[in-house]
Image 1: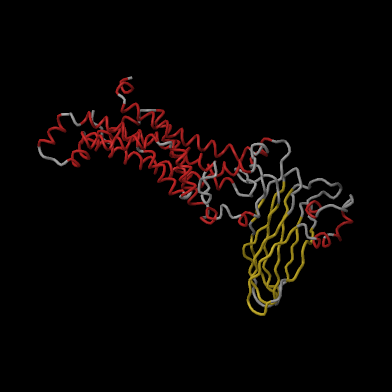
Image 2 (image 1 turned 180 degrees about the horizontal axis):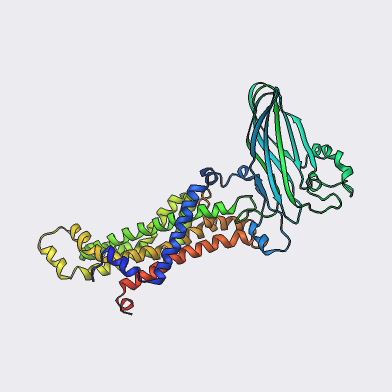
Length: 454
């Protein structure tokens, strides 16, 4: 039976399990597009840079677990400001306002204000907060270092600084419980009559006053510390796991599809050429194939990763080297059958060259097998890379799912009950493999006459 790509797709589209695999693959490709479009490339490059994740919580659970709990755990919030500016006589004022509707059943662990100021002279920085009950607390009032000309100054203000406790001491009389030994964030978020959470709308105001010119506040962020964060939580190194999982999707597809296509193309051409030529050529090529086939792939991959390098591109090359031999054996046997058909013999009698007969008359007949082999080979490539990364032999500069599992194992995530660090990458590996297995099963129904008749 002759197959063209259109005929193959027509047969494939009638398979429910095959279309299920296609649907999963479309979702994975959509996640890859989201990763490229929404996540800054710097997050990918700085995945293993601890300084880039200092503002994130350590080992925080996903924020959505609050939907399944009666008491809501405080969420780690990184707030961006609403900026405004005005001129009061000769004084230029820049205001950054941070509003948060605090509805959690616990106090924030701390709060941090991070900023970069551009100014000249010695401007005054003031921070205050307006509570849901209308009370205003002055938190910080400090002058920035003097600069005779324009300068850029970056700093961070922490809730643990004693100056904040001193500045709110004039409000102690309004509280009906002792404030000794209580942290500033608990004072700010407490009810007046008892040491309990005051829920509602809080607005933090940051004002920068300057008489020498118009100041500018950049990279201004307010961080309220909490125990849950984001869609997938964070790991021990404070990294946002949702970023790692999203970036791992295009990396897994790149590894799996590249290895499978490379292996199938090499194996098909090699096996078809050996089967078509026959005799001594076939004998020599297949003995070399047997040598490669007999080599233990995983131990050799481990040795190559240790001695040559663990670059992800080298790993793809190694997987291709060990992945084509089985395909070559099958394609050789199929080529030996096809070359006896009358139209191939007619092409030989007409004097067509060998490479033209191979690429025009034999290889097109193997397209269903090629597509099925590509689909079936992808899960093996992905799981092999994940296994090497889990053993610590992967490329640490790329946040692959296997690398995430390796880091989870290194920090004993399973023993500590950090399921959000283990289950998501494992599920993603399984789902990706399942998609290609479904597609391979559907392609097998096309190339297998018995299944096709059934």
